[in-house]
Amino acid sequence: MESDSGAHTIVILGGAGDLARRLLIPGLGEYAESARIIGVGRTSVDYPALVAESGAEHLAEGAEFLAADATDPADLRRVLDATGEGAVLYFALAPEVTVKVVTALADVDLPADLLLAVEKPYGRSAEEADELDRRLLALTDEEHIFRVDHFLCEAALTNLSGLIRANLPLGATWSGEYVEAIDIIYEESLALEGRAEFYDSTGALRDMVQSHLLQVMAHLLCADGRAEPAAVLDATSVIEGSVRRARYDTYAAEEGVDPSRGTETLVQLDLTVDLPRWQGTRVRLRSGKAIGDPEQAVTVHYRAAEGLAPARLVLPFADDMLLELNVPDPGDVEDLRRVTLHSDTVPSRLSPYGRVMRALLTGDHSVAVPVGTPQRAWEILRPVLEGFASGEIPLEEYPAGSAGPWK
Image (cartoon, rainbow, N blue to C red):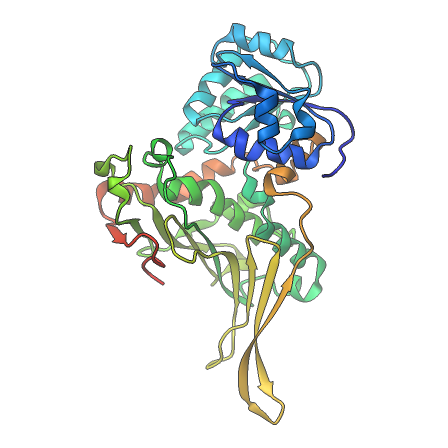
């Protein structure tokens, strides 16, 4: 546990939901020695017990729950009256509910220092994201809006970005001149696990690629400080013919699934970034569910001389790293062997959501989703979503628990 600068208040709309129980409250417990947690929801719960069961026992005593309808201005006014100064209002809600809450807040006098923390998915299109931004900026300024994506606090991104900034050989070769391809892959062995209501209307492309992996890519490609994430996304396009989608073979039989929707549980696509620094580099994004021996890593493929395997730097979504090199036999320099150097990285003191909580409570916007980038991500994927809707991009199938197709 890290020590923060003092007691803070975090108000969680959807305070008894899955996101709060599994991630937000545990993350807050990791970071804060003292914090006031106020959960908000329509039905009262024993919040101290919930907070303790979520792994934040030391914060349970002061935890409280307010039964309220967060889409009702009068109820929101009552909630904010109970928070005091220096509060974070965290939207742990479905996107359609978030919009209703933001609309209701227009009829409430907000504390001047209130920070609005908005979870992904950030709308379901560029137009919806624009509208949400418009409504948020009618309430407050950018300094008091924090767009959350915990993947910007994942080890693969933070470790690789740190390596590029802190090591001249890596920083000097962080360009298309030296990097042939980058794979950003996040597969899961889990299937739906009771989340059909959310997932069947979302799918892998919206759930993972738009919300997370495009942000990871944009931040990685400007890790050396020579560009901004928005500029990277502005220059990004999908390589024609590279998009593949599939679903695992038992998906349609899952409770709550509408098979006619054709929801994909696995997606893969290749991107190009039309910036001088990244000409000729292919970026592959891949994410899926119900995958056997799932891969979760960022892999950098360096360019190589003809006939040689490329050097590869692998940063898993964990505190780990691998470097694959061609090493000669000392007795015969023409006899090259493949060697893998494997090392732990500096152990993380906080989980990704622990880092999110630290950023929120310290006012650190460096790990917030930059303004305008969700819209840019939606625009990149617009032709892909149209191809899904028209059937131009066919829906394939793979056995649940397999490695999936296209590998």
